[in-house]
Image 1 (cartoon, one colour):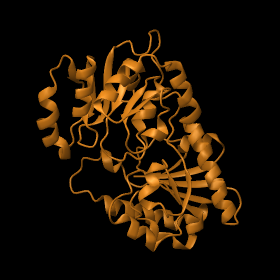
Image 2 (spheres, helix red, strand yellow):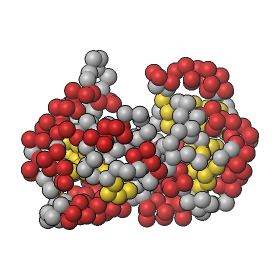
Image 3 (cartoon, helix red, strand yellow):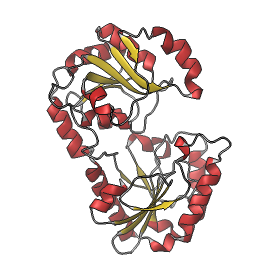
Image 4 (cartoon, helix red, strand yellow):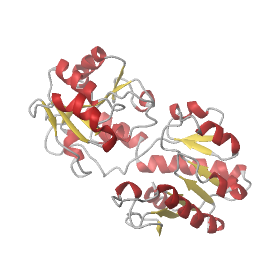
Length: 334
């Protein structure tokens, strides 16, 4: 996102970890991102507090302070300039303590990543909804062969109860197609994986290909007949959906969270409510125009489309705050 904002002519400073790759001015807060740091005894709360203090000290350098934090840790720091802040929470908002916490700081402007994400905080100071976007060249459909030529169904994500890979296996078996699972087994998900998923992986029709990199995703997704996303939780967005769209691959997803917002029914995939509907959607997915799916991605979910929508929100923020247009923007993320 910061690169797209820079491309639109904005002066952006990114407060993040030192290994971040960005066209913005990087203000490194720690050597490695928290989620990539395997060091023992690290403190995410302390790391975020230290970052927020650095942002607070430089707050007057920026027209807009854009926070990408889901748990409102920054709210006590920026009351004096709240009208120049915007917060994009990237996680679920139905945790029991979030609504009471937000009511203590109700002036903070918020931007949701989907309309569905807003429901638990329906009365918050919502400024806009901005769907995620990706650089258009990050993933592309396969070259030199038809999309979906691998003839398999794909699952990409985590082996968790929320993501329901066991349900993906049910769909593939009922549809009579192979399934390839590209996923990590996290510490919290090991029992579920060993009990519900691993016994069904035969290495032939049901294959676990391990975690894959960004470089591997175009082939993995582009060669798949469809991506299965049989989620069992209120997914606030689901980045993997638009990764598939970028590769021209349709998505078959459960009717949970933001899926009905992101998937154009019968165009970029299908939203379903049962195994039977999912199996039927697998057959129908073969008739979808994969070039059109890519076109929808470019129109709705490119990084530039996302950045332009954010800029429009910044302009509303600055106008309501009686300030000039936003040119210098600070983003925070660890």
